[in-house]
View 1 (cartoon, helix red, strand yellow):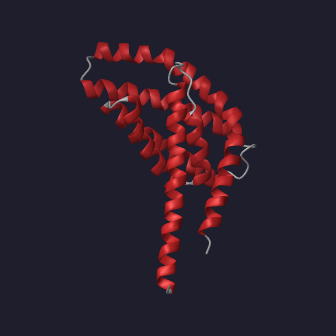
View 2 (spheres, rainbow, N blue to C red; view 1 turned 120 degrees about the vertical axis):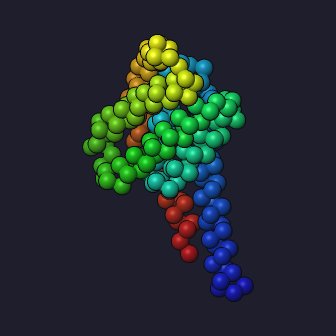
View 3 (cartoon, rainbow, N blue to C red; view 1 turned 60 degrees about the vertical axis):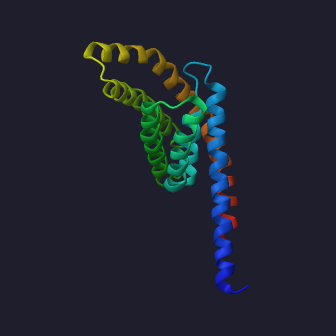
Length: 190
C-alpha cells in the first residue's frame, strides 16, 4: 500500500471513530432525556452538554447539539418550535461552554461561575421559548402573557435541577469526557 493510500485510510478511520464517539454521546443524551421526561422539571441534558462541550470543544459539541436536536424529534415527535428552539439553544450552549473550556484552567476553582452560567442558560432556554412559541403560532398579547406565566412553574425546578446537577456532576463528567478525548486523540496520532 502506498503512503497516500495509507494516510487516506488512517484519516477515514479517525473520522469514523470521531463519528462513533459523537453518536454514542448523542444517543446517551437522548436516552437520558427520555428516561427523565416523565418527571417535570428534572433534566440532565444541560449538564451533559455543558460537560461535553467544556471538554470536547466547539466543533464536536456543535455537531452533537445539532444531531441531538434533530434526533430527539424522532423520539418525542416533530414540533417545529421545539426543533428551532433546540437548534438555537443547544448550539449556543455548546459554543458558550466550549469557549469556557478553552479559557478555564481549574474547573474546581471556577465551578460556582460555571454553575451560574449554566443556570442563566436554563433561564434563557425558557425565555427563548416564551418568545418563539407565541411568535410562531401568532398568540395574542394576552395569550403570550399566559404562556409566559405558565412557564415559570416549570422553569424554577429546571434551574434548581441545573444548579444541583452541574454542581454534583460537572467534575466527574469532565473527567470521564477527558478520558474519552484522550483516547480519541491517541487514536488520531500516526
